Length: 142
Image (cartoon, rainbow, N blue to C red; front, side, top):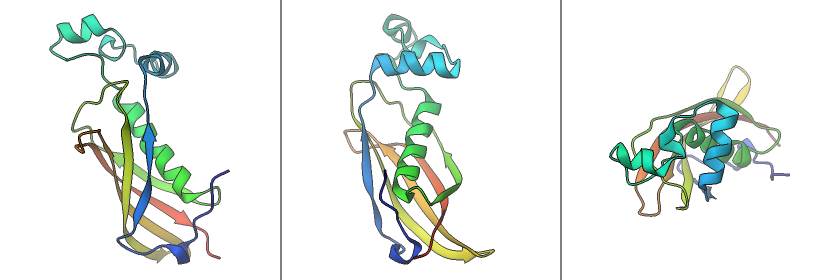
């Protein structure tokens, strides 16, 4: 079980511990089956290359799910994910690690809840932010 993060322990500007993912082509095939997104650029290398890509690429929604995991792992079991959004600005390939990273941008109370806004992103092994996003969580108090 994930360690619990409490609102009192959060400071604006703090970095969140990264989550490193190691996606594989097999994972993309499984994700295609689970999501119903069978676009061949996600699992057929020849098709992807025929469409001008270097090879298969990760599903955008899978990258969003990685960011969701990053946030829910960070906030712990008593936190609540209120908002999650991202933009697909670059392509990521299987068999190359990608890291979910983030920083706390705002800490505030709203309607009796302890809220935290974060800038989050996926970063490839070259340090490029391929999937920038944001999230808001409600955290418990000690």
